[in-house]
Every structure is written in structure tokens, then in C-alpha cells.
Amino acid sequence: GSREVPAGYVEASRGCAHTCTHCPITPIYGGRLRLVQPEVVLADIDQQVAAGAGHITFGDPDFFNARPHSLAIAEEFHRRHPDLTFDATIKVEHLVEHADALPRLRELGCLFVTSAFESLNPKILGMLEKGHTPDDIERALDLAEDAGLFLRPTWMAFTPWTLLDDIVETLDFVERRGLVRHVQPVQYALRLLLPPGSPLIEIAAAQGLLDGFDADGLTYTWHNPDPRVDALQAQLAALTAAAASTHEEHPVPAEETFAAVRQLVGPMPSAAPNKAASVAPRPQRPVPGLTEAWFC
Image 1 (cartoon, rainbow, N blue to C red):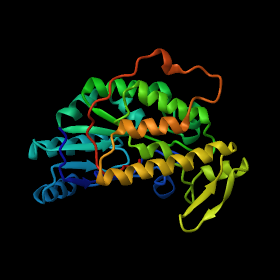
Image 2 (image 1 turned 90 degrees about the vertical axis):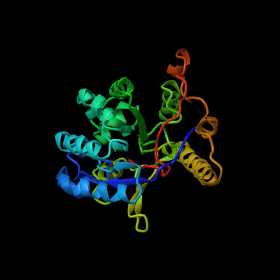
Image 3 (image 1 turned 60 degrees about the horizontal axis):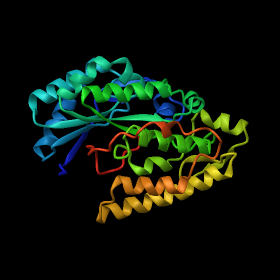
């Protein structure tokens, strides 16, 4: 059965060496990375463990930005607290590039890794400057599975360039790879934020897709050229929010919410064949994670 343990939170680094165009960290840090002294991080962990934490979340934008630094902290964390577990966020590109480090990550107590898959549409991945392809996503999943690590994908489901087909393809992929329990349902409704300084503002404006500035939300608003996409996003946001609020009182199985999302989205609008149709979906299995939805 499942059990809940209090989770602590630390950061081994701040900022990020990457400059993904949709990320709110990019306008602030501009590709700069700041390492936190290992003794500071470890003292923070010790204090939270003493207060009752049984699991630690490393909240770095990317745990493998400074891999030797992060792994050294993880090694010492495991030496001091061998029975504790942790999780971290790691880019698809880094999971593939540093595949040799994944088994050790698992040995040190890493329960799961959050990774921003964002999209299966190569054009959108290029616009977001993610540094990975759909094939890399498949590879990262295989590598994590081989290492005994659970991957929890996050998605940038709705952008000004998202097609209805993209949403269907994402759902097909999640089902085919046995990830229904790995993905928090709110991920299927996430809408691109354009904070001041986002390099995507100019692109959206040039294409006539920018609507104005929302002072309360501190973000520029936009619309998709296909009004059905924006309508679907609003419906999915309402559905997943309702499921999440219900879940607080009465846990809703992930499969149940996924089925409701599936039904709302419907079949692929284009004549494109369903890639998943000829592949038997992988079985769904219990997946460790945080009770609070994580937005990567």
C-alpha cells in the first residue's frame, strides 16, 4: 500500500545554465548558475530531517547543471541519512547525456526524477529551445527505467503554436508508455506563461497572437489561431482543477481523471494515423511522487 512521509526542500544551486525560452528563470538569471555551498545544503537537510522529514526534494531547476557538485551532495546526504529518499528535476538532454550517472542516483536513494518533456511536437520543442527531441524523450524513459528510476514528466500542453493533434498525441504517448500515474493531471491543462522579458513575447506579437498584459498575473496574454485549442484548454483546466480539489478529500485514481481527459479531448482531428494503435500500452504501476502538484 501507499504511505505518506513529510518531505523537506533544499536547493543545491540557483539559476540555470540553460535558457529555455518559456522558462521564467531565463529572464532573471540569463543562463547564469549559482552553486550553494555543500555544507550549507547539508546543514539545511540535517535540520529538516531532525524536524521529521523522511524525504528531500532538490528544487534546483536542473540537478545535473553542475553534476559533480550535486552528486557529491547526494553522496554525503546518503552517507548521513542512508534510509532517506530524495527526488530531483533533470532535463531530458542531461538524462541522455549522463546516463551513466542514473544507476548511482538510484543507489543514493533517488525515488523519482521530474523532467520537463514539454511537447512531442519538434517545432514547439525548437521554439522553446529545450535541447531535446521526441526520440530523446523515449530514450530518457528507457534509461531511467533501466536504472530503476521513476520519471515524472511535465508538459507545456498549450502554447500559441499547439495543434489539437499535439494534445491527442501526448495522451497517446502517456498511455503507450504506461505513464498515466506518472503525470499529474493538471499537466494536461498547463498554458504557456509569458512574463516580462520572455523572448517568446516578440514572436507571438509578430504573428498577431499577443493580446495584452495582465497586470494581476504579471504575464502577457495570448491566443491560439485555432479557437478550439483555447476552448479545450479552458475545459481541461476546469476538469483537472475539479479532480484535484476532490482528490484532497477523496483520492481520485489517476486512471479515472485520465479517462475523463481522454473523453473531453476526443480523437485526433486530422487524418493522421494513431501511432499508439498498433502498440499495446504498458501496464500502469504505483509511482512515488509529491502530494503537491509540481510545476516544472
